[in-house]
Image 1 (cartoon, rainbow, N blue to C red):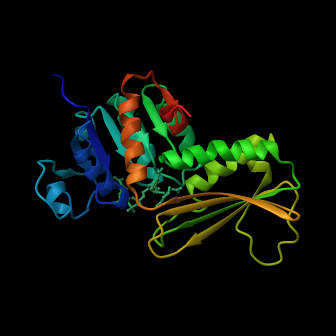
Image 2 (image 1 turned 180 degrees about the vertical axis):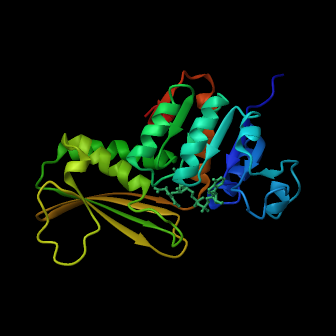
Length: 269
Ligand SMILES: NC(=O)c1ccc[n+]([C@@H]2O[C@H](COP(=O)([O-])OP(=O)(O)OC[C@H]3O[C@@H](n4cnc5c(N)ncnc54)[C@H](O)[C@@H]3O)[C@@H](O)[C@H]2O)c1
Ligand SMILES: O=C(O)C1=N[C@H](C(=O)O)CCC1
């Protein structure tokens, strides 16, 4: 019998990194072959299972991506933009599927990732859950059905350690709403209102970000008109939904041609 696909988890000590290590171990569909952390992290050299407070699993945390990617069929990466851009090039060199969950990527970052996807499979999404990717499709449909009498506002809430805003998910929802309306999000985006903003511009798509406590990730898409409102809502209750989606993407990508894909491709939505 052939071996299960080998997966490297980057940012292995992080909130998502630890969830991914557990999800892979429990899946029976893949095996963890590497755990990567940034240079200087105090988990480097330790067994990842023990560092997480459990039994040893014979995978030592390393800060050397080249050495560890060479053993992998897939790299699952929920870290930070600069790290993810570097890993995209290295994963492509190793011909490993690169699953990117990292958010807060700039246009320049996205261009670099897209260039790496000429040589290997990259699956990137600001949210890997089934529910959010379905919500993206619903948002596009509702936005296409309603005219600009309905103001579109995207309200997101996350834990107090999140460093980027609006969330990657909020931006996916904004893109979907803009696509449904047949406009470019960049032309109608309205984020970070503060002070004497003036009245709301008809046709704009607004964003509001809440940060507090340990909220995993809540997203509302509000369509507000005179005398009636529709709200589409997703709430993630824990991070397993993201980790399961990322693992599914890593397995799905194994027989695909080089290119950049998203979770709509993976889930066939
Ligand atoms: N797409 C999704 O479904 C989804 C879901 C949850 C989180 N996220 C995103 O994933 C990212 C991480 O989220 P988190 O809550 O796990 O953050 P976190 O801060 O808990 O973890 C990030 C980890 O990456 C490590 N890291 C940073 N630079 C590194 C490098 N050069 N090499 C190796 N490791 C490095 C950090 O040390 C840290 O352990 C964020 O961008 C977040 O928005 C996406
Ligand atoms: O915890 C985070 O950070 C999350 N980030 C993603 C985003 O930016 O949308 C997904 C939800 C959790």
